[in-house]
Image (cartoon, rainbow, N blue to C red; front, side, top):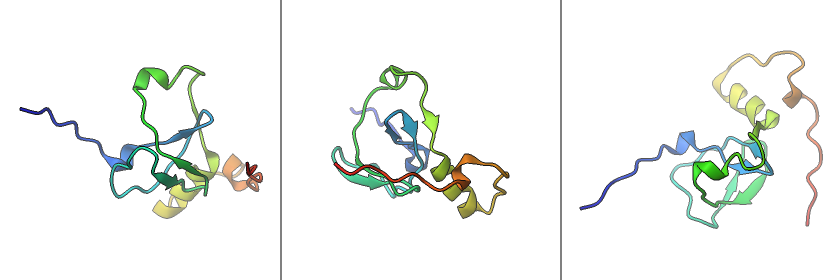
Length: 93
């Protein structure tokens, strides 16, 4: 007998450098599979238990993913929202 664990891909918020992002996943990514966040950041999928999430403090929300998400739903974006400022250039390795 097996115990199924159901995961909603829409509820997955990947964390990169202690910042949580939004993404549009059609399924559960395989470990190591590349995923793209709504802000344009990319990373390989990894999985950990929830107790590891707050080792470095609570993650903060990516303001650029938040703006993209709000726009996709037609929601109002408050004036002064930090995601409305130009996005800093990402460093490339």
